[in-house]
Length: 303
Image (cartoon, rainbow, N blue to C red):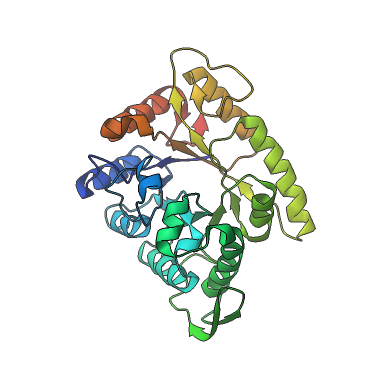
């Protein structure tokens, strides 16, 4: 199992120096992935949860690529409708080439209505836009000359090079857990990347996804959830407890259960909007506790 971290790229105290230090630390302690979040327009609905400054994910990952050598660099998740797919294809393929094939693109629909409005994108059409943009993205990653005729995108004979370093293309992690989202994963995704679910929800989603992928004539995508890590001194009980919350023993049990499901990777998410001023410090302490008591990061095993 691979282990990663949601590197906090926004809020008070986040600077280029902090991002460099945290990215290098993640690599040094043996993490496999460092992944960051996406917002483009920090409208009031976004700022309420993710205050400025907010560093652009693709620019930040390119910056981190120059300060690391091994760790994979990803998004969790990039909001697809915010960027024209030709622009996104060019940026991601270039980043994958320049990093030596280390990019992982996690994608989703986003939720912020005010941000959508600020960018002039129809929030109500975001699912349809995402599906079409993902089709364009995969076509542009895999062919040096691309044409496309769709509802939202139309172009003819566009040169797409450089193509990604990785073949057949950059790993595409698709988020979401609704029925339409799982159909999107089955159609486009290499990996299902759900956020903040219970172990049972992940188990049920993986079972449904395997059936949808078979109907689509594709192999079942791998599973790599992002776990909302909230450490407590006492057990957190109840059927609604999300994986990753509770005591160290509970988190260890969650990871063993996910390992039994064949989960390929886990991204630890320590972000707490109620502690943005100390988020970086808390993030470091949490990961060190997990590395000491729950997971062997260098071996990819659970203690």
